[in-house]
Length: 358
Image 1 (tube, rainbow, N blue to C red):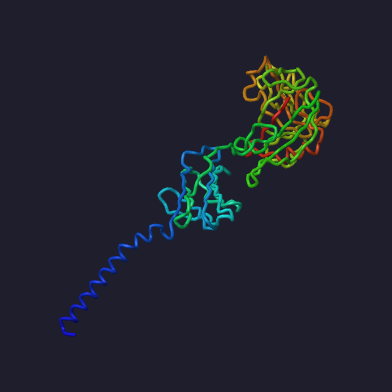
Image 2 (cartoon, helix red, strand yellow):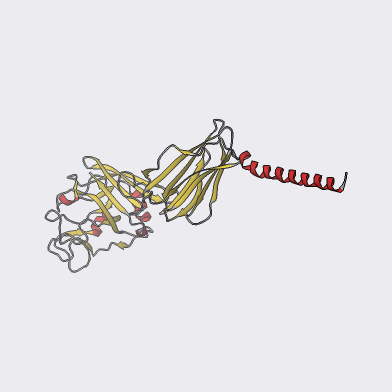
């Protein structure tokens, strides 16, 4: 073959190569029309959907022809996505993914889980703007992750103390005196344990009330023999000796009186005086000797401004103390051991409250 022939062959071969190369470049997108790997993303933003005391949740079902990887991711808007959990679809070619937001200890807790796996805590934050997405690396025939439920909201505030409407944000020590019949009833005390997220009963006893029963606090009058129903703060404790309480404590002496003289400036107050005894009141030492005030706790019934009296003189000296038959209007515990334990347990930093029920 001559030189010209050789040159022709080389040119033809080069041209064929260019054509083949061109076919490969052009043909590639056609071959990848159903790409080997595609990403199916289903996401939502938990922003402004959750208010204090609520939980928002959503559920996703991911379907495919066989077991495939499902990835749950989370991020704070503007930051990178972070993987929360990985799992695979079930034999039914379906994986359920659920995201939940709850309030715990005053901070939002973001959780996610796939199928029946344990809940994974994503983040603890005071904010409510977070994004979640479900990512499914899959082939072309995979369907996108679909949501089969809208975000729902339920009340998940910390529960109220049993038998009351008092939540931990208000008080972490709650005493409940509940009259059942006549002058008798029950007494229970509860404390809030934040680490466990629940109220725990720490003591109980039978209880007695005023000899004339229990009436609403705004209808109670002095010398009526009734116990005022309502919710009251516990101010301080007193008695024969401090059992070791964190509450302010006063020791009763022979000169200790509780003033019930309506005209006295110190009405419904403790008066410590050996020379100026009240015209009407309780000599506290006498009650200690009788066993009633060995330990006692003062409630704030008609205490803030006793000159302003509910119902034409609602009275004073409404205590928690020991009694077995009835009281003149107080709440009496029939167990001295429980009363002493209650006084020792009270903590002013936990704002103890007593709830007296009719």
